[in-house]
Length: 392
Ligand code: FNR
Image (cartoon, helix red, strand yellow):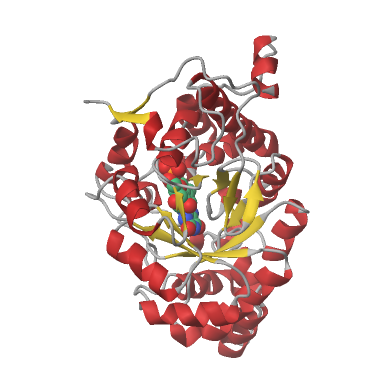
């Protein structure tokens, strides 16, 4: 409500409220390489286009004379904890290529706006520094999972995450190798190998990785950044995936809820229930991994029907507005992860820019629900009765 009322007083924000314009404005500020990295998709971009198009297949049906006396309650419960807004910062790597303050700016904005921060394994800032910037904010750790021969590194990362207040573990299953990304290939660009500029901080600050590197090369990581970056990149993108049985290892070594990110089928969602994780993120990585795929929103209802009562279903890929969050929640998601929009905010204005994006999306969601006569984001109010198929 505060956001909307401020808007009514016509106090100009340094950033636009038109969420679909954030991309082009941010692009003006970025190098060709970092723009290509964030805007780019896998292959022809078919999956990414479908992600966006899927939202317009559903329409919100406004109900009238609903006697709601207050603004909608946007709070949601995920893996046993209550959050004031149903959005989270999606894990995004190497944020220093978008703004020199990188992850520090985003982690601060997330804490300020009371939105959980999910930290990427590919971060250009260390686990310890992100935790300090995030303070008493809610934070989860996203794992790019080294192959079993590097279990000692995995254990070290999980220990650091837990010690630094990352309360849940998000394991990304769709990125054991990077997708076919024409923009980056045209630019000859792999941000993880630009260690001279950004530092692959999670790896370079890891004591186990550092010790092994020194043993192999007889020098510190800092003395041969190129080799260190290449080795770290191979460690966290090993090029093949684990099996379902391997999840047990993570359950044994991380004391907290585990959420599997990148689920797109009912069969895999059921596997997640069988192995006893607490949540899944229905996601196709924003269309950056497999091209020619389905929209992420399209598969959400089936997955919720199959497993929604057994674990928490979170959602991402293509969310750009409050109405998009409302639709995903109405289809059964407990929370939406926001990817590119906050990266554009980071490029436009560091911490303030990320704050603006988070405030905009939650303000927009609040008014959308209010005007649709939906008193809260809880499933008792925000459910499929709020939606119709556009062609119905
Ligand atoms: C990502 N994403 C991602 N996911 C992950 O698990 N670990 C990571 O390090 C990254 N890195 C990353 C970098 C950039 C530049 C982008 C755009 C995305 C995927 C991210 O978490 C999320 O799934 C998508 O961004 C969601 O789609 P939208 O919101 O960007 O459409």
